[in-house]
Length: 181
Image (cartoon, rainbow, N blue to C red; front, side, top):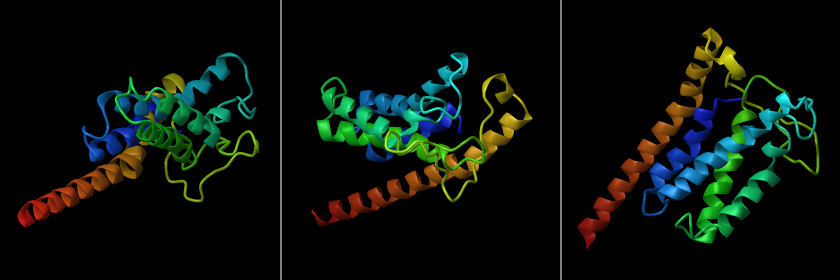
């Protein structure tokens, strides 16, 4: 699994690209929380829930249904999030869905139950370049450093390049529209 910091990178990048007029600070925070929330299933380790169980790590909270439920919650809470129901649902749902998709791109674990409750089969992406993060204190080790380097290369750097590309494209478009008015 990517680190909790990296899961928050997706909504932060999307929010930066969209701008504050489209994504309020509250909606951005809700998106970051939604992107990290699936890993709340790690409490199962303490409760002795088997990893491979439906409510084990990377189980039900890593499903499309869970992302849709968070999207619905964001739509219902659109006023406090200072957005429209559709924008809130789309942004939070996409942020939540990014979590299992990133986890599916790691080289460790048992995969994600993306299609739960219709299937408990765990799924990996065909391309798995991200080094899986160790859990607990082992994160603060040489392996943890390798994970951070892997995440920088495969997630943070591409996200930053994409955000910069979109920002430059929007600036060029804005200037060309200003020149024609």
